[in-house]
Amino acid sequence: MQVFSSIVKKLSGIFILFTLCALALVYVIHTGNVKQFDYSMKVNVSSRQRAISEELSYRIIEINGAAVLDSNVTLQMEELSILFKRWENSQKALHTASDHFGMTEINSADIQQLLLIVSPVYNECHKLLEEVCKDIRLMEPVQIRTVLDNLKLYIRGMNDVTGRYLIEQQSTMKMYKWLVASILAVMICLVAFA
Image (cartoon, rainbow, N blue to C red; front, side, top):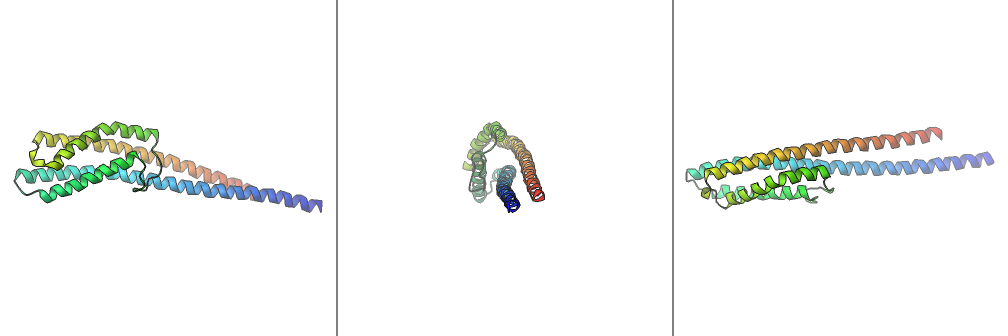
Protein backbone atom coordinates (compact mmCIF):
# COMPACT_ATOMS: atom_id res chain seq x y z
CA MET A 1 0.00 0.00 0.00
CA GLN A 2 2.86 2.38 0.84
CA VAL A 3 4.54 1.58 -2.49
CA PHE A 4 1.31 2.41 -4.32
CA SER A 5 0.97 5.67 -2.33
CA SER A 6 4.58 6.57 -3.11
CA ILE A 7 4.04 5.95 -6.84
CA VAL A 8 0.86 8.07 -6.84
CA LYS A 9 2.67 10.96 -5.10
CA LYS A 10 5.56 10.71 -7.56
CA LEU A 11 3.22 10.64 -10.56
CA SER A 12 1.13 13.49 -9.12
CA GLY A 13 4.26 15.62 -8.79
CA ILE A 14 5.36 14.76 -12.31
CA PHE A 15 1.85 15.45 -13.63
CA ILE A 16 1.83 18.87 -11.95
CA LEU A 17 5.26 19.70 -13.41
CA PHE A 18 4.18 18.43 -16.82
CA THR A 19 1.03 20.58 -16.67
CA LEU A 20 3.03 23.64 -15.67
CA CYS A 21 5.44 23.01 -18.56
CA ALA A 22 2.50 22.63 -20.95
CA LEU A 23 1.05 25.95 -19.78
CA ALA A 24 4.46 27.61 -20.12
CA LEU A 25 4.76 26.16 -23.62
CA VAL A 26 1.37 27.54 -24.67
CA TYR A 27 2.27 30.95 -23.24
CA VAL A 28 5.66 31.06 -24.98
CA ILE A 29 4.18 29.99 -28.32
CA HIS A 30 1.40 32.58 -28.04
CA THR A 31 3.80 35.36 -27.05
CA GLY A 32 6.15 34.38 -29.87
CA ASN A 33 3.30 34.53 -32.38
CA VAL A 34 2.25 37.97 -31.13
CA LYS A 35 5.84 39.23 -31.40
CA GLN A 36 6.21 37.71 -34.87
CA PHE A 37 3.01 39.41 -36.05
CA ASP A 38 4.06 42.73 -34.51
CA TYR A 39 7.46 42.69 -36.19
CA SER A 40 5.86 41.65 -39.48
CA MET A 41 3.55 44.66 -39.32
CA LYS A 42 6.43 47.00 -38.48
CA VAL A 43 8.49 45.66 -41.37
CA ASN A 44 5.43 46.07 -43.59
CA VAL A 45 4.82 49.69 -42.55
CA SER A 46 8.47 50.73 -42.77
CA SER A 47 8.78 49.09 -46.20
CA ARG A 48 5.57 50.80 -47.22
CA GLN A 49 7.08 54.14 -46.20
CA ARG A 50 9.88 53.52 -48.66
CA ALA A 51 7.42 52.62 -51.43
CA ILE A 52 5.21 55.63 -50.72
CA SER A 53 8.27 57.91 -50.72
CA GLU A 54 9.31 56.56 -54.10
CA GLU A 55 5.78 57.04 -55.42
CA LEU A 56 5.72 60.60 -54.06
CA SER A 57 8.96 61.30 -55.95
CA TYR A 58 7.55 59.84 -59.15
CA ARG A 59 4.29 61.78 -58.82
CA ILE A 60 6.12 65.05 -58.13
CA ILE A 61 8.22 64.61 -61.26
CA GLU A 62 5.11 63.71 -63.28
CA ILE A 63 3.01 66.63 -61.97
CA ASN A 64 5.86 69.09 -62.31
CA GLY A 65 6.32 68.05 -65.95
CA ALA A 66 2.61 68.47 -66.63
CA ALA A 67 2.54 71.84 -64.82
CA VAL A 68 5.45 73.10 -66.91
CA LEU A 69 3.40 72.25 -70.00
CA ASP A 70 0.45 74.18 -68.51
CA SER A 71 -1.70 71.07 -68.24
CA ASN A 72 -4.50 70.80 -65.71
CA VAL A 73 -2.99 69.01 -62.72
CA THR A 74 -5.91 69.33 -60.27
CA LEU A 75 -6.74 65.62 -60.14
CA GLN A 76 -3.07 64.67 -59.88
CA MET A 77 -2.60 67.16 -57.05
CA GLU A 78 -5.55 65.64 -55.16
CA GLU A 79 -4.03 62.16 -55.57
CA LEU A 80 -0.68 63.51 -54.37
CA SER A 81 -2.36 64.98 -51.27
CA ILE A 82 -3.97 61.61 -50.46
CA LEU A 83 -0.62 59.87 -50.90
CA PHE A 84 1.01 62.48 -48.66
CA LYS A 85 -1.55 61.76 -45.90
CA ARG A 86 -0.83 58.01 -46.14
CA TRP A 87 2.88 58.75 -45.84
CA GLU A 88 2.26 60.98 -42.84
CA ASN A 89 0.03 58.40 -41.04
CA SER A 90 2.49 55.57 -41.57
CA GLN A 91 5.30 57.64 -40.10
CA LYS A 92 3.23 58.37 -37.00
CA ALA A 93 2.44 54.65 -36.67
CA LEU A 94 6.13 53.78 -36.64
CA HIS A 95 6.83 56.16 -33.77
CA THR A 96 3.92 55.04 -31.61
CA ALA A 97 2.59 51.50 -31.61
CA SER A 98 -0.53 51.74 -33.78
CA ASP A 99 -3.52 49.44 -33.34
CA HIS A 100 -4.71 50.56 -36.77
CA PHE A 101 -1.66 48.98 -38.36
CA GLY A 102 -1.70 45.97 -36.03
CA MET A 103 1.37 47.00 -34.05
CA THR A 104 1.19 46.42 -30.31
CA GLU A 105 4.75 46.62 -29.04
CA ILE A 106 6.78 49.75 -28.45
CA ASN A 107 9.97 50.04 -30.50
CA SER A 108 13.35 49.02 -29.15
CA ALA A 109 15.90 51.68 -28.22
CA ASP A 110 17.84 50.93 -31.44
CA ILE A 111 14.77 51.46 -33.60
CA GLN A 112 13.84 54.63 -31.72
CA GLN A 113 17.38 55.90 -32.31
CA LEU A 114 17.15 55.20 -36.05
CA LEU A 115 13.76 56.91 -36.21
CA LEU A 116 15.22 59.92 -34.38
CA ILE A 117 18.06 60.06 -36.90
CA VAL A 118 15.62 60.07 -39.81
CA SER A 119 13.20 62.50 -38.11
CA PRO A 120 14.91 65.75 -39.24
CA VAL A 121 14.86 64.46 -42.81
CA TYR A 122 11.20 63.48 -42.41
CA ASN A 123 10.38 66.91 -40.97
CA GLU A 124 12.10 68.68 -43.86
CA CYS A 125 10.36 66.42 -46.39
CA HIS A 126 7.04 67.02 -44.64
CA LYS A 127 7.46 70.79 -44.80
CA LEU A 128 8.47 70.70 -48.46
CA LEU A 129 5.71 68.25 -49.41
CA GLU A 130 3.12 70.51 -47.80
CA GLU A 131 4.34 73.28 -50.14
CA VAL A 132 4.20 70.92 -53.11
CA CYS A 133 0.64 69.89 -52.21
CA LYS A 134 -0.46 73.54 -51.96
CA ASP A 135 0.58 74.30 -55.52
CA ILE A 136 3.54 72.78 -57.27
CA ARG A 137 3.33 75.42 -59.99
CA LEU A 138 4.55 78.06 -57.53
CA MET A 139 7.75 76.16 -56.80
CA GLU A 140 11.07 76.80 -58.46
CA PRO A 141 12.94 73.88 -60.09
CA VAL A 142 15.60 74.05 -57.36
CA GLN A 143 12.88 73.60 -54.71
CA ILE A 144 11.53 70.55 -56.55
CA ARG A 145 15.06 69.14 -56.68
CA THR A 146 15.41 69.73 -52.92
CA VAL A 147 12.17 67.83 -52.26
CA LEU A 148 13.37 64.89 -54.37
CA ASP A 149 16.82 64.87 -52.73
CA ASN A 150 15.28 64.88 -49.25
CA LEU A 151 12.93 62.04 -50.17
CA LYS A 152 15.96 60.08 -51.35
CA LEU A 153 17.67 60.63 -47.98
CA TYR A 154 14.49 59.64 -46.18
CA ILE A 155 14.29 56.40 -48.19
CA ARG A 156 17.84 55.52 -47.15
CA GLY A 157 16.96 56.13 -43.51
CA MET A 158 13.84 53.97 -43.77
CA ASN A 159 15.93 51.19 -45.32
CA ASP A 160 18.04 51.25 -42.14
CA VAL A 161 14.91 51.11 -39.97
CA THR A 162 13.47 48.20 -41.95
CA GLY A 163 16.77 46.34 -41.77
CA ARG A 164 16.92 46.79 -38.01
CA TYR A 165 13.34 45.53 -37.63
CA LEU A 166 14.30 42.41 -39.60
CA ILE A 167 17.39 41.81 -37.45
CA GLU A 168 15.40 42.20 -34.23
CA GLN A 169 12.65 39.95 -35.59
CA GLN A 170 15.13 37.18 -36.39
CA SER A 171 16.89 37.32 -33.02
CA THR A 172 13.59 37.44 -31.10
CA MET A 173 12.22 34.46 -33.01
CA LYS A 174 15.44 32.49 -32.34
CA MET A 175 15.00 33.14 -28.63
CA TYR A 176 11.39 31.94 -28.70
CA LYS A 177 12.34 28.81 -30.65
CA TRP A 178 15.03 28.08 -28.05
CA LEU A 179 12.50 28.51 -25.24
CA VAL A 180 10.01 26.18 -26.94
CA ALA A 181 12.72 23.57 -27.50
CA SER A 182 13.84 23.84 -23.86
CA ILE A 183 10.33 23.43 -22.50
CA LEU A 184 9.70 20.47 -24.79
CA ALA A 185 12.96 18.88 -23.62
CA VAL A 186 11.86 19.24 -19.98
CA MET A 187 8.47 17.73 -20.83
CA ILE A 188 10.09 14.75 -22.58
CA CYS A 189 12.36 14.21 -19.56
CA LEU A 190 9.33 14.28 -17.24
CA VAL A 191 7.56 11.68 -19.36
CA ALA A 192 10.71 9.54 -19.51
CA PHE A 193 11.16 9.60 -15.73
CA ALA A 194 7.51 8.83 -15.08
